[in-house]
Image (cartoon, rainbow, N blue to C red; front, side, top):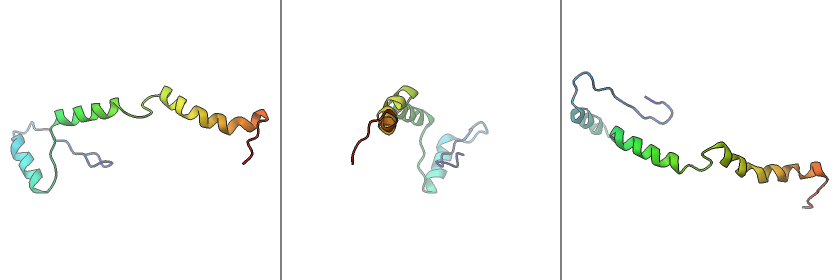
Length: 79
């Protein structure tokens, strides 16, 4: 169980049928997703993530950092 987002996973080595377990969980009002579907969804989100790596974060932060550092170079922006 992941307490942050509420995801729960089960290991079905004990002989419990997958469909029987899924029906029991759905009868409690929860949604059941297969592992394959969750992994493909996670992969789709991670490939399109904004600021996914350090280079993207660097280029995003650079203009803001330069704007904050202008006063150090004697350039003052009147407001």
